[in-house]
Structures are given as C-alpha cells and as structure tokens.
Image (cartoon, rainbow, N blue to C red; front, top):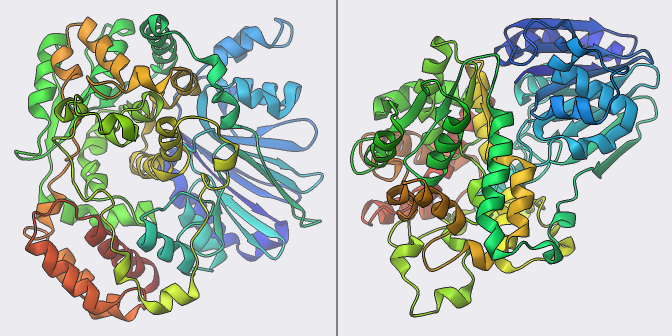
Length: 593
C-alpha cells in the first residue's frame, strides 16, 4: 500500500508548485517509509512507499524508470510475482536478487509482454505510467477496484492521485456533482460509476486502462479485464469436485497473501468468512495470530461467535468496544480522509483497530471481504422458485435476521429542483449487463462485485487503513477464487442448508460446524438505535438543520415526517437517515466556511 501523485503539464505544475508540494506531503500517510518526487520535462511525479515487499531491495523503490523515458508508479501488491518471475522470464532476464521486488517484476512484465500480462497477475493495484517523450499518461486499475485511482482533466492538463483530496487542493476547483447526489438519494448507490461526489473528478473504473495525451488531448478508455468471459456455464465443475477444488484454490491464494517480511493481523467478525480465513491462515502460519474485532454491547456483539471458534483454534482475539463517544470524536477525521459520504458508523468504528495495529508496528491487516460475492453468501441471491418452496427452511437460509426494509432509502424526500436539474448516473454494471450470460443468482452477485457493494467497501477500507499507514489485504477478492465461484453451479452454493454451502461444509469438516451453519447475521452495529438516542444530535443538528434544508436536495416536510415515523417504528433500517446526515456533514466539511 502506497500513494502517488502526478501532474502534467510542467507549466501547470510550476503554476501550482506550492499546492502540489503540500498535496504530496499530505499523502505521506499512505507511505511513510520512503518519499521521492521528480520534475520531468512534461510531468511531476511523486511517490510515498509503505515498505512491505522487498524491504532492503533498491529495485522496489519508486518511481521506476525505464530507458525509453517512461516511468512507472504502482500502488498495491502483486501476490504471485515470484511465480511469474519463474514462469515468464529466463534466468538470464532476471537476477535472483531482483525476484524479491514485485515492483521490479511488474515493470519487467509490462516491458516484455505489454498489458496482456495484467491477466496473469493476482493482486490489487493502481498503476500510473507516464511517457515523458510522448506526453502520454496511462492509468490502470485492478479487476475489482481494490486500490483507488482518481484523475482530473483541466484544459489539457491532468492531475492523478491515489486520493481525491490532493486533486481538490491543487486544482482549486471544488464543485458538487449534483448527479451523484441525486443518484445516491434515489438509488442508494455510490462509488458505482466513474463519477465521484465532486464534479469533474473521475475514478478509473475497475479492470480498466485510461490513457490521455496532454499534447493532443486524445483520451481512450478500454477494459483489460472482461468478467463476462469467465461466466461460461460450459466450464461448470461437478458437485463431487466442488469441496476439493475450493480447498485447493483457497490454500493456493492464502499462501500467497500471507506477508513474509512484516508483521500482520486480521480484522475479524464472528461469521463464516472470518472463521475460514483464520482456519486457512493457521494452516500455513504457526505463530500466534493478531486478531482485532470491532465490538459493541449486546445484542450487537459478535463476541460469543468469535469465542466459539477461538476456543477451538486456540486464539486470543482483541476486542475493541465501540461507544457513541468514540464515534462522535472521530467523525470529522473520518470524513476528512474518506472525502465522500460513506456507509455508516462502522467506518469510524474501525479507527481504534487500525490505531492499535499502527502502534504494534503491524503493517498489514487481512479481512474476509469478497467471499459472499464469490460463493453466493447473501440470502438475496436465492432464486425466487426456491424461496417459494414451502419445504425450504427460512431459518436455515438466514431469514430470521436482518432488516425487512432492505433498501432503506427515501426517494420520496428528493426535492423537485434536484429531480429537474440532475440525472441518474450509469453504473459499471449497467454498461456490462447485456454482455453477461448467467443465472439470476450469479447475476446479482456480479452486480455487487462490480458496482453495488465491493467498490464502495474497498474505498472505505483503503482510506481507513491508509490513514494509519496500514495495508489491508482481501484474499477472497482474488480473481482465482472469483473465477472458481463462477464455475460452480448456483444450485451447489445455494441450498436448503444455507448460502455458500460448500464453505460451510468445509468448516463443518474441520470441526467448526457450529459457526459454519449458523444463520447469516446482518446487524453489525447499534446505529439504528444510537441515531435516536446517544447520537441523536446527528439528526437534530445536521439532518433537521436549516443549512441542510436550504441546499435544495430534499423536501424538508417529507424529511421531518420520515424522521418522526422512524422514531415511532421498530428502527430496522436507518440508512436513509445516515444518507441525509452524511451529505450534510460532507457538505459542511467541504463547502461551508
């Protein structure tokens, strides 16, 4: 995990040099171990490194320069770089000492094979390649958008960065994207397209290459990762092979994702994903694991389930009890680093965990994001015909938990002005849907993977981890596991005994069936209750404020009515209240004096 910043043209950089250097300095939290910048003929490029792979190898330093006036900056990790160094190069092409740097191997792969080599990489990455001879910039993002990459075009000039804030500060152009606001309020979606909440600041789409020439102003965008090619039902594997194949690929991925040169820990819950992640890591790592959990008071605590598998696996987890006071204290800083609205109180709830990891000099944390999308872990993935079957146990499917008001949005509160002046943003999925051929269950998981869930989750977690100079690894978002999941018929994954059934069966085979076959739990925090009690001021001082009403986004009378209804209800889903609060708080942080 690192951070980079680039500017073109040189005249543009010289005009804004003080702001550029301040923006570059602010970015240092992403990589405090080594900082380097260069002023080229046509570009400024700067890089902050968090040293995790090749700690003592100078070949791992960046920017990485080639002989043809091109230079590369790379944020992320290539987990299979050692295998690729053996498979794709002769011993004459790569010296043994250079095989300890994923940056060097990535550079050599692109030089030798071009961008087709991206298909061989198992990793998370955002890449910038500048050609100082042709004035062309190439920006590349990993398959599922794990690592962020933003850019801003300004009259032929370009600013590109691992974070939005330096772009805003350098450009001096901070404007609200009304289309993003409208889409957020109408559909609940965000981080699902190349547009951000700031007008004209774009995000490079996952699995995409964006190229821009600052001399000719020519720009091209093309997908290097075409997910639809991996959804062919002819490649389905047999039921008898499913468990063995999943175990084989899980082992292969986990071995590569375990850090070998720095200390690491795990963000855990009491669910299936964390349990199998820990179980697999222990197979290849025989030291005591550093485990961190975001804990809440009963009935929101995961502690009983964590204690269940901890006793079986001889673990000593660290529980961090999150209180309303801690959330209140950290909200402003969380918004400052996220820079856009985010999902809820669990995001600032991660702060104590990453602070602990930072103090312990733990550079890497690992979590279980992605397993539900790969192996159909959500109840909404069930086909309608199965839900209508009277013999299906709703309890086993997890239908005894979770909010009944799944969407949790209130489009009826959108103002007529916003409806008239804004339009819905197309999602990554809407541009892809016609090319996908799969059943409805898998289609829903693809929606979550490419647009509806994973892109926003990875933005939250990247920004909260990098704030504390920590890298977050997500092995279950490895394309190897995703592609394996695509090859398993949905009927083998969604059964009467639960979602992602083979994963549960693997846990059962390892003596962890009590966790493996527990219903999926959706309540993660007491946000629904806190917004009417301990954190009531977020509603009173922000949602019901004159400043929010005056922004022209909502109908004040409808907002007041919906708040009153919520206070008198079962309080099952507070997302719409969080939407209104986060928009107002974000607006005050960025646009009010």
